[in-house]
Image 1 (cartoon, helix red, strand yellow):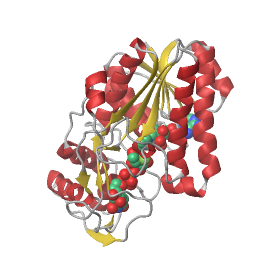
Image 2 (cartoon, rainbow, N blue to C red; image 1 turned 30 degrees about the vertical axis):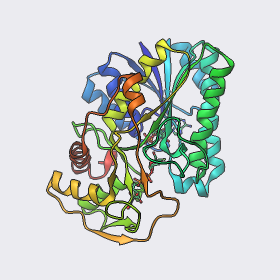
Image 3 (spheres, protein in one colour; image 1 turned 90 degrees about the vertical axis):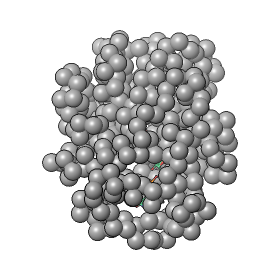
Length: 338
Ligand code: NAD
Ligand code: UFG
């Protein structure tokens, strides 16, 4: 059974290709490589022993998608393709709205034309409004996004919700990811940020390996147990398996489903630094810096709905996340450029 995977060469997409293959699905990848390398797919082949059908191109290209869907009988799509850097989205809003919304609109149009009315969408915990109580439930308030990237996820969800409302044949699943970290245990695939990482875990790994002098801890005066920001970190392989569970749900339901993919446990920045040091026997020098504008003190999921409805639950713990992040970083100090 073939699954169209947009953005399949990226961090989460490549891990999902592995899990799809393990679950006997065949990924058909389309990616323009604007934030990834085709090497990730060669590595997926190394892990699984299976070739990946790959189209290098843009998901906003209707003719390309039409040709792919004419060539392959797919059962559904997973839509990872998108730009994801929060700061960049503030500086380049037009590019973010164009890429992230046009890709979703184009994909849905072509899927509908080919009678493939099933899609899993990469949404984010960022769609939740900042004034909710923790933990975040799927019914918690959304909106009030603090940046254009967040709005593209909010609007992407809404587009899919409206499509499912208008045509009862559609089945859409909006997956709200919390903070994906870690890498496949082989160390062959992982996260490869361009330039200076924005996110905590790649910054910790690059500091441990000596590429960064120290980690700046953005604020130690938050109302949390040690004053630093608390997040729900989730192993990327768990996240990838959440997509396999979502496909099974798609195939037996219509309408819209929305699910949190998180562990339900929050760790602070300093918790993560200490866990990384002790899991890997390395040192991560840090300095306390100012708060980063737009950051929340605390953000973690209530994952009960995913457990009860999708039958999915995170399996990996904080130690696994730290060990696998370091395994990838130390085997590939320059990511796929090595
Ligand atoms: P990533 O950048 O590694 O992967 C995205 C992929 O999409 C890249 O390979 C990129 O080349 C491709 N792409 C972008 N625009 C495209 C287009 N128009 N046509 C074809 N390919 C295109 O990012 P990721 O971390 O794997 O994230 C995957 C998805 O999950 C994104 O939609 C992201 O917004 C979402 N998400 C990520 C996080 C996170 O922290 N990593 C959290 C929540 C949601
Ligand atoms: N942090 C630091 N120093 C750093 C980087 C991060 O102290 O160098 C702190 C942040 O202040 C925050 C925590 O580490 O408290 C996590 O920060 P990340 O940037 O790794 O993650 P965020 O929770 O800010 O955002 C991430 C993604 C967003 C997504 C959101 C919710 O980057 O795209 O999770 O899913 F929307």
